[in-house]
Length: 209
Image 1 (cartoon, rainbow, N blue to C red):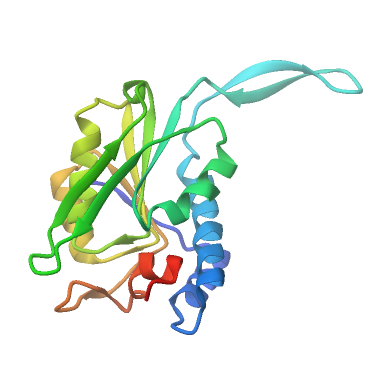
Image 2 (cartoon, helix red, strand yellow):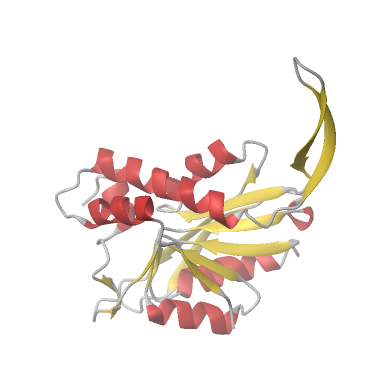
């Protein structure tokens, strides 16, 4: 089974409460998605390895630490996952970016692939898959399956809100993938929306409600 990390930092939880509010407009919603993603990136990269380097400060030479050559890739699931991307890149500017396009069939609620573009050297990289919502888990499972065909070094899945059903589906399909989220909500309703959730993240990010 996958391990799941739920971020309970007060700043994340405060911003999440505003994110959920139906009166929050698209501009503020985008900003909050980005801010929460930045906090999550900080925590999800905690296990990156460091190496010692010598740096000359204005005072003297000092032994410091830098990332030990780990190559990262961020892969948002279109379209809502793009709302998390800029924040991740602001933390790790050298990361490469891929995109996977999946949409949910309104009748079957199953994901349908329509776009797939990954970095050529993804096999050398640790991959972070981005999607604000983990609902049924279908899109996450399919996106990760697509990425695994290229044999990356590792995969982590970052979402802001997760439903228990989605966690279960993703954990069963990809037990090796670490899941990070800001909240584990109650359940999915009959339309496969997370309860209490925040509605459709893509519509709220891009103002297409």
